[in-house]
Length: 613
DNA sequence: CTAGGGTTAG
Image (cartoon, rainbow, N blue to C red):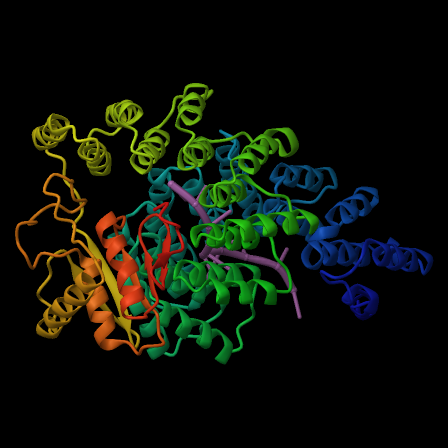
């Protein structure tokens, strides 16, 4: 036995890791074969498992080795099931599961755990249920990891009910399966139940804390996510890489660059590894908080990049108006041998759209099916309509919608409507809004756009008609809200908000801004017919859009060389857009606004969106 | 030295 142990630790096997090449594996294999060691099931098992666990890129090779092996160990077969469960071909797990029986072995709790996870990936009707049945027959339903896998599987299959049934059937809840149930509940928006589980866990480990933080972030409870992370540190729980991903995601949602920077510094100070996932979350955070330079710095600093990493960076560039750079990155990605997916193409098309590259956009759109076998989805069609529309090719945009092989969705008509607003086209605009409102009768934005198209074309009866319809249908909207961060503290302003403790100073500053802007020729949007995106309380002189209040506050509290960063929950309106441009020139300040659509970088009187809104 | 938690779009 002792000799077996030393064989199992054969130095060449210990050397295998993710950088090992196929050639090197062949050499190790030949070496083991020549020395006769490979006949030992333990050694071949170790060899196969080492490849499976530490060098998944060479999984095909270890699969062939294992297939030729007379007496594979359960350990090596389990390892193969495990790698395939996380691969794009989870069905291959079953090949090794079947081999377990044929070799006269019996599956253990590890086998079923990995197999269940393979089913969660596979998502073929009935397969998960039959594996569930098989593991019950083998008596593994009381294993906490198997239970956790089952809950996770049913969550993936879309049935919170089944998760609850599994969970309810367990007498003694282990932390592992409680954590799985916590994640499943959060995934389906039942954050209250997730909290309840978290609160009554007898022992909360890092994984449980991470799951709860991620649950908050997924449900859009960003503040709660950040609060819980701070609590986690106070409790002295060990923080690791997966802890930071939802923390960054919360910063991304809030648009709070200072907090995001703090999280980045925390990662470095605690020497957390810059894994693919963590790096991608960091790039996304910087991109969506408006610091695209920093996002690219992180991007280029990464050792490896997958399709998520590339797509995040490309999406960031597109959102920030850097369409050319987005397309350059796309060619580099392909050169790097990374295969684009459907999400990548959303970024590519948006990149083309923001700089008006109609031809390139069409070329890339066609390449989706021709070269990559990716079926365009609604988002891609929406991007194409936006591409044609923004460039002023309204008829082509309309034809494109009419030729769509699937039923056009509200987003496609919305993109066309938006283009009609930019290019002041009333006829197509009416058609687009009618179609859009058939699909989304309560879409506030559609009414506003249509009304403004009428107003700009001086069709007053059109304007009043829209208003009547809106009222009769009870269309509601979110109140506009803008957020500014000063010294890591988040300040929130609503439309016409006078509740801030510094409101008196803000009021004085607003007066000063308007006085100076008027001297430079700014005409406040006084057209009483032009429909305001946040029209309510317009008659109140102090009722200003939240981004104007936020700008005044930023001018007071932020140093001159620091850009004023504003995050808005709605789309910025034309008047505020003009206002921002003029403030950026008159006060010589950079202003960066993230609205719910994209970024606007105001500098020296111009905007990065080139007034394409 | 096999089991849990995390990322892009909408």
